[in-house]
Amino acid sequence: MPRQAFVTLFKPRALFVAGILSGLAACAEPSASKEDDFSPVFWEQPDSFTEMTAYYLNAKVWIDRENGQYLDLQFQCFRHSGAQLSIDQNLIVNSSVDPSKPNGWARRVDAILFKPDGNSPRVYRYGSNGEVLSNFTDAQLDLGYMLSRDENDNYRSLQLRFVHGASSVIALAGDVGALSRAASVDFDLSTTDPETEKFLQACAPVKNWVPPS
Image (cartoon, rainbow, N blue to C red; front, top):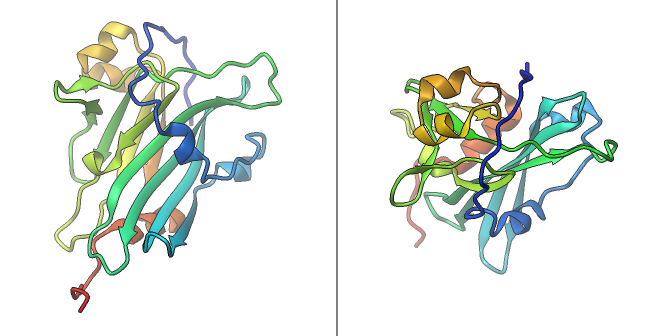
């Protein structure tokens, strides 16, 4: 269950904001007031013009139910017709507030931790200098950076922790232990949930693939 805590803010970064709205435009926006809307939903969208199929998984997770604060998540990957591998595997994160809370405000995310099955947890970093992605309300992440495959080329489950109660010093230091103890909410991109499994299977390499003639 989500944990409550105070949040420390520092100078925001806007590097990942570009392209966020266009990515979320493909996602229906149900009200955050219904629990059913928080269940993961897989869907796909073929495009004959580009000869490509887009695969999406929409999900929401509460940060603070009482104050209407939640995370709107969309996992994405795209595959050209006849291709073995998917491309552009993304995770779009949008920190939101229930519209029924007129004085509500979106909670900033201080850092993201991720742990594929069989691996140790890591902090999400970006850019050539490996800076921790921190202090944001909207971001587009490289999902492929976080996913891993098993010996059969299937994607493993991926555990995500969205930290919202860490100081700027702890967040930028990227201390996994300290970040894991700060207030956070979790989401599992799991092979055991029917909807999340559909997404992982859709994005994994095609089995017994034969090049198009």
